[in-house]
Length: 212
Image 1 (cartoon, rainbow, N blue to C red):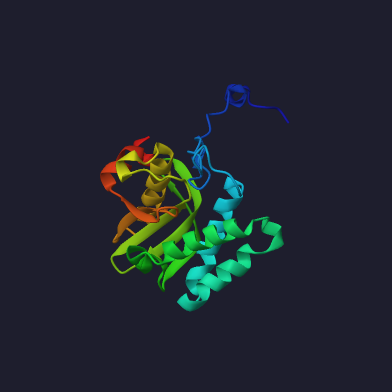
Image 2: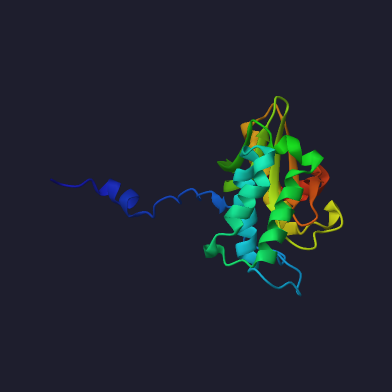
């Protein structure tokens, strides 16, 4: 059949530009270099393996009765596959037990809290997808905790590396969308100190995804 010549220019014209897909943002896997997990003179267990072991134990130990945690940590760390010396096993177990004994951290490990909580959403044109180390959802607040095994930790919150502030600001932005009626509180839990460090909004606001 004959084609309408008037329709040809529209067919030959370049297609309209497609909408840009949202930029992916994975706070659990920062694009920037993280500070060293150990100080430059630390030796012994591989720093990344050590950090992974601490994260794994902090995922499961809070669900156990307090009087069973130390023994469970010792048994897990003694597995030959971890390749730890006895001194390393004792040091890591003591670090984890000290974290769980922090009075200010106890509510974050209580009933209703979640370990390795996956979160996904879109904020400010960025797709945020990550895994929160500990998430505690209360009637009026949502608490976000990320574990850091760096040694030594910064002296105060103002000295927190920007890569961590950007990570926590992304979590805060997403959780504010998910829980608009609740306040979102962000914390870094420095395991070596041990210290629970609150990150004020004034620290996180410059790194919020919607501001970038």
